[in-house]
Image (cartoon, rainbow, N blue to C red):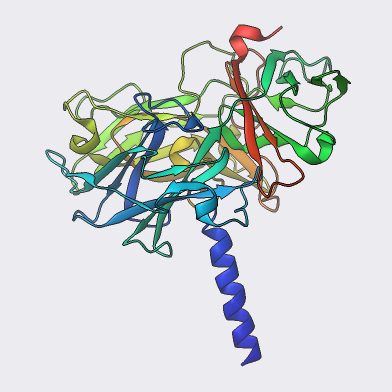
Length: 424
């Protein structure tokens, strides 16, 4: 009995921790989740404190009948762990909101109900700056969690000077990019930067390879300088691959064939070879984002269709990578290197394969590897895509501050720069 009780407690605790993971979809009937700055599908949801109707949230329920979906905001610390505060301490108005705008799909072969909203609403909005999990759930019951998405709410009181440079290390200056920055702390009272400041640097708004834990190399008056040679180095990667699914009738250049024999249309993509030996090519990409769109219907949010898309990655010599797993990496997989994005090696064909159910649109993605026994290691481009210093990347610096009397991390500064405009 004691063993059973302990097991149940451990299960509840682990389930609660799992349910706090950002950018996760928990219900298989939920598809096409998209959260962005209002009017721009390629803009990451970072809003100013007090802003209303600043973001759009869209998702589909493939069960095909109307349900009662609610949402709330969970304040987290800089490491995305829930803070020990009541929702009334960081939510103004009601602690929950309801999705009242929905539309049943039309024209599409697959029946679904599309839900959308402009957030935050004045009746339920964050009252503090910081990291928030947008939680969407059924029937007002947070235990029936459908999915989570990240939201950053900033109160800009710290100015940040930011640039991208070549690393000085000759072994890295052709494959990596170095981010250095200066923050002006004149408007906040910092007695101990190691305890009160947390810095996070993102590449293309990804959290799976974020760099944290940096300390200022120099402190001159009100300026903290972060320019250590080894502190903020990112493998540059390569421009993202893409697939154009805006039409399922007119095949784009990356599509090999389309089958409509089943209820769910199947799209077979042309095999993707590894690109480590390919010369770098400049082209405009979506930096891992995707965009819901169609060339065939006027209202893509509820008139576009879904398809089962088959991805094929061809490793060198058609041989599996020893002791490594291969994953599809991009916004469409939430940048989660797990069972939702892992590829299976087909020894008969000598390729990695994976199928994803995707809504019509334009998708950018890459392939990454991770050691089979290295779940905590960062994803690696070097075996699948290669790293080239010329690659266009967007870098974002987030500055979090916590006074000695606070119980949460305030987001007090955000700065973003593109490597093609500042690299030296």
